[in-house]
Length: 105
Image (tube, rainbow, N blue to C red; front, side):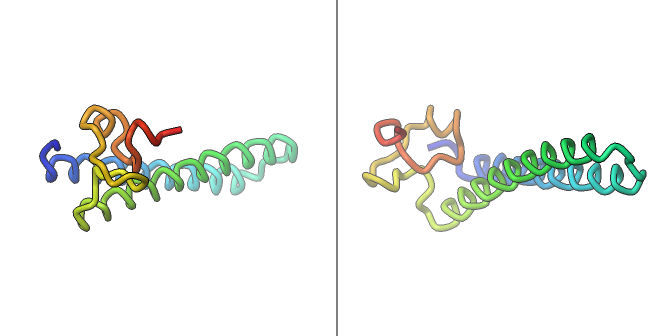
């Protein structure tokens, strides 16, 4: 497996970036509301889109945090379904994965 510390640092950077993205989205929502947007339909549409983006980012952040926990526990890179190692190529492509290619359906 790739160097555990470099994997950890990469995941921490991804988590930091995701937290920043969530914060930016939430700030944009507050700014638009504070500006007194008068077009309610526009405001609702933007709020719905932003809420979807925040939900997606929060989900990604949870996946990253879970991967960091698996690193701490020593279970990172092990398929939760069969217990076999997850290929380095798969972890490189999808660092938060919990399953090997065989069980990725």
